[in-house]
Image 1 (cartoon, protein in one colour):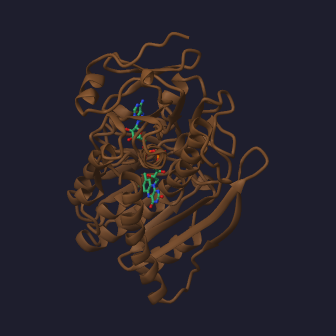
Image 2 (cartoon, protein in one colour; image 1 turned 30 degrees about the vertical axis):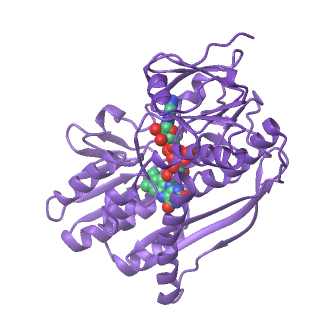
Image 3 (cartoon, rainbow, N blue to C red; image 1 turned 60 degrees about the vertical axis):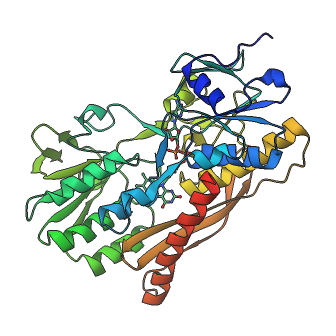
Amino acid sequence: MKRRHFIGAAVASAAALGAPMLRAQGRPRVVVVGGGAGGATVARYLAKDSAGALDVVLVEPNVVYSSCFFSNLTLADLRSPESLEHGYDRLGAFGITLVHDRATGVDRARREVTLGAGGVLAYDKLVLAPGIDFVPGSVTGWSEADDEIFPHAYRGGAQVALLRAQLGAMRPGGTFALVAPPNPYRCPPGPYERVSMVACLLSRINPTAKVLVLDPKPSFSKQALFEDGWARHYPGVVEWIGPDAGGAAVEVRPGVGEIVVAGAVLRVDVANIIPAQKAGAIADAAGLTEGGWVPVEPLALATKADPAVHVLGDAAAQGDMPKSGFSANSQAKVVANAIRAELTGSRAFPPRYANTCWSAIAPGDGVKVGATYSAGEGKIAAGAGFISQAGEAAELRAATYAESFAWYDAISEDIFG
Ligand SMILES: Cc1cc2nc3c(=O)[nH]c(=O)nc-3n(C[C@H](O)[C@H](O)[C@H](O)COP(=O)(O)OP(=O)(O)OC[C@H]3O[C@@H](n4cnc5c(N)ncnc54)[C@H](O)[C@@H]3O)c2cc1C
């Protein structure tokens, strides 16, 4: 099969880095789309462990990655937004070719990825780690065009900064409403950690303000721990409205600052709309999605539709692992090992997966849930797990909180070098 190779401005800029460009040089090429928690990790491990035997190309439009993990803490001023920003410079040192462009299509028959700037990348193996997109129309009255009024703040960076600014400017005694997403979605405890951090901020700068959670789910991750924490730290501030009380069928009106719940019109001062989610659009463009997500096998996250394409992180329908940065990073190392073994003949290790999700409830009060996972029958299956308990000693909670900060530093280094 005759293949075209790099064409276009993005490729020219990559060539300027002095990186190897062509499969014609004899090395198998792995193209990784998405430089987030999953994609940057897989690119780094592939390049680092293959020591030059693989041509690794990472396609990512942004030059700075603003992590969602820990973004809730910026809402309570417990972390600075700058401390969550990561560049890609160090990945270049591993011999990865960085292409700052967006992948717009995948021709799986020709094994080619097309780029927004017009280039084409041939691949021997393709890894897609594009994260999430939102399901249009999933919250009545809201679309992404409204995200400057009612932000989603579910991708890091500017949206989170906007939400923090809106909270800071909220009228005294105002109402903040969070519309939570249906399962499955990125970071199961994320909306509820956000509620905790917003309540933390408001109890300091706007103590008569109220926090309303509108939820389509009858229960949520670490519910007992969050509810216990809200009662202890922010008594009377947080009200959770589940599906029985209208949380599943809200209508939002960004233009007039209203949310309709079970027929009642509520005036809201700041609203955070977290819609239903699906795999990042490139997964759909590649013809790999079913029900919005990409079915993958559990040994190496190869897609069930095409063994030359692996999908990991939030976009994958892999089984029992929650959609988290920890999971994406863990999956990426398994995928890197399997691809390297297949393309270079190196040793393949049995897959082992792990996840821990920490959540901050208040400064110095952290909780966690986690588990190990293995390749089961047709899916990644949960093994032994653990979870924090209500009523734990303050010292243990403080240690868990500190542990989460150490985790952030460690995983950032593991992802970005
Ligand atoms: C508020 C919040 C709190 C969170 N807290 C935690 C936490 O404490 N711990 C934890 O483990 N996880 C947490 N998460 C979840 C975590 O952020 C995600 O699960 C994780 O980022 C998923 O990694 P990913 O690689 O699949 O996607 P991402 O990290 O989102 O990376 C996807 C990348 O792909 C790029 N991309 C998309 N489409 C294309 C394309 N067509 N071409 C090229 N590039 C493309 C994007 O620009 C992006 O850089 C949190 C999430 C939120 C929203």
